[in-house]
Image (tube, rainbow over all chains, first blue to last red):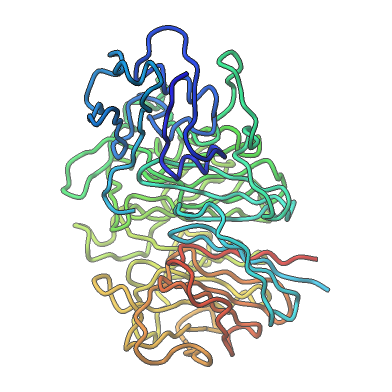
Length: 98
Length: 394
C-alpha cells in the first residue's frame, strides 16, 4: 500500500483524517498514485491536477523523503521508501498565504 | 409562520442564518466548507430545500456542493460522501468539471480575450462566481464563471455544459478583466418569458438572450465608460451588477463601475439615474420585493478606494426608480467604518414588510425587517462576506 498525506482542505473534501492508503498495480509513480487517489476518492478529481490537461495544479507540490519531487517526471518511479510504504508521498499546498 | 433563510458565502466558508417571519432572532449554522472561499450559495425557487454552493480555492480549484435539505447536509453532486468507486466505475467526480466548448464551430474564435495589457490571452477557467437555479426546474442551474462564460447543468449539478453562444457571438476578443478578474457574475432569468435571460460581465457589459441561452447580443447602449478607448463602445463596460423586479422584467437596474443606470426596454437603452448619490461607484443593487420602483445601492467611495464614503455605512434607497435617493443609516455605523459591500452581497425577502440584507467585507451581515428604515447586525464577525442570498420560506 502506498501512503499519501493530503493537505487539510482535501482531507475534508474526501472525508478522511490522517494519511490515506492506496493500492496500485504496476509502476508506482506520481501519475499512478494520483490515478489511484481519484479512483478511490472521486471528489478529489480536478483538485490535485487539472481536469483537462492532467497537469499538477500550480499551487500544489509533491514531496517525499525530504525531497521536492514536483518537477520530476510524473512517470518516474517514486523513491523506494514510498514504494515500500516506509515513507508517505506528501501532497502539499504552496505556502503562499491561505 | 413564515420564515427566512439567509445563505452567506465568505472568504473562509458558508453560513446559513435562519429566523422566523419577525426576523428578530437568528440561528447561525456553519462554517460549511470551512477554510474554502464560498463565492455564492443559492436556493432553487422551485424547491427551497435544494441549494447550490460554489466552493473554490486558488490551490485546489472549483467544487460544486449541493444540499437537498435546506443546508443541513451537503454533497458534491454525483458523489455522495463516503461512497468509494472502483477504477472500473468512474462516472463520478464530474460536478467540478467546467470545460470550455472548443467545438469546430466555435472553438478557435473563443480561445482568446483581451488581457490587462491589451494583448490577447487564452480563456482559462478559474472559478464559479454565481449559481442561478432555474425558476421552475430544481435540477437545472446556471453557473456564471471566470474567465467569463455561462455553463448549465440539467442534472442537479452533476455535469456542466457551456452555453457557448455567449462567448461565440463575436465580441469575446474585446472583453477584458476587471480588477476582480474577467468574471461573469450576474444571471437574471425572466419570470414571464422562459426564453429570455440576461448576464453581466466585468468588464464586457450586459448581454441578453431571447432563445434560452443559445444566442446572445450585447445590450450596452447608453452606457458611458471613461476607462475604455471609446466610452460608448458596444462592449468593454465594467458592469458590476444588474437587478430586476419579477413583476416588471423588462425594467433593469444596473450598478456600473461608476454610474447607476436603468433600462425600461429590456436593456435596449440605458439612462443614468445616479441623481443625488454621494458616489455613484458601487457594487450591489437590488429591488424591493413588493415595490418595483424601490431600489437599493450602497455607494462606495471610488474605484481606488473600495470602502464607503466618509467612514459611514449608508444604504441608499430610491422610491422613484432612481435619481432621487435617501440615505438609510439607522443601526448602521456612522463613523470609522471602511468596509465594502461586494456585488452579490445584498438580497431581499418577499415578506411584507420587505426584508433587506447585506454583508460586508468586514464580516458583518446586516438585516432590515422594514425595507431599510432600521438595521441590525445579525452577525458581526464572520470572514469577509462575498455573497448573501435569502429564501422566504412558507
